[in-house]
Image 1 (cartoon, each protein chain N blue to C red):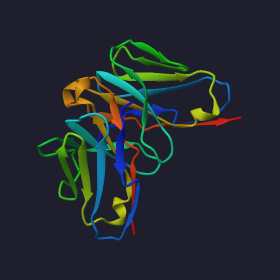
Image 2 (tube, chains in turn blue, purple; image 1 turned 30 degrees about the vertical axis):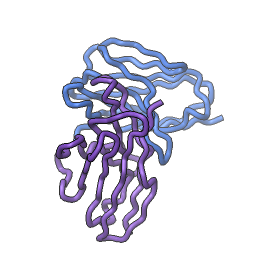
Image 3 (cartoon, chains in turn orange, yellow; image 1 turned 120 degrees about the vertical axis):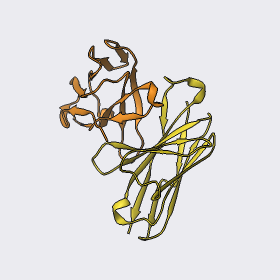
Image 4 (cartoon, rainbow over the protein chains, first blue to last red; image 1 turned 60 degrees about the horizontal axis):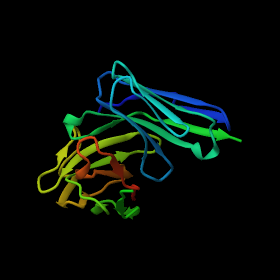
Length: 112
Length: 118
């Protein structure tokens, strides 16, 4: 199936640093979502974006829905050890009963 | 918040046997549930859409006779991996949407079920 391309694939950062990751698609989505997955668990929703150009924050997390509807980015400010995990973007079109197409994932590791 | 529970969380079986995985929405009703598969260090790939009271819709390349899906009630969907083989070993994750939330309501994911076929 189709996948969204995320970059970077993985990153090591120091505690306190800001993090930025993005997600691009060859096709348009009406909804963009960002999830975090810890090892051996299901993904947990971080932020949902419903309008092109929308910028939304959730605590230290900020995400934007690209104007072209083909991309999105997620920023994490002042990273902490519990930010470790895999971050997935996902695209959805409500007309398809909310099936999600997931990105390739960005693995975040934080060093103290 | 809404909870989706999967059972079992881990299962090990012999090659050739069938395994059933349950996905339950604990405090909401879901007319649609989704089944995903995730190989190690890879993304989630949608396998099928489970519709309450009707047949599941499978994604291209997913064998419907191999992965049987039953959505018998508004709170339960099951995935049965029939005649499992080692290549079926994977992490299977379901998700469900509260039907009261409408088309933009949040999708909730289960905690996943890790299948290992020996």
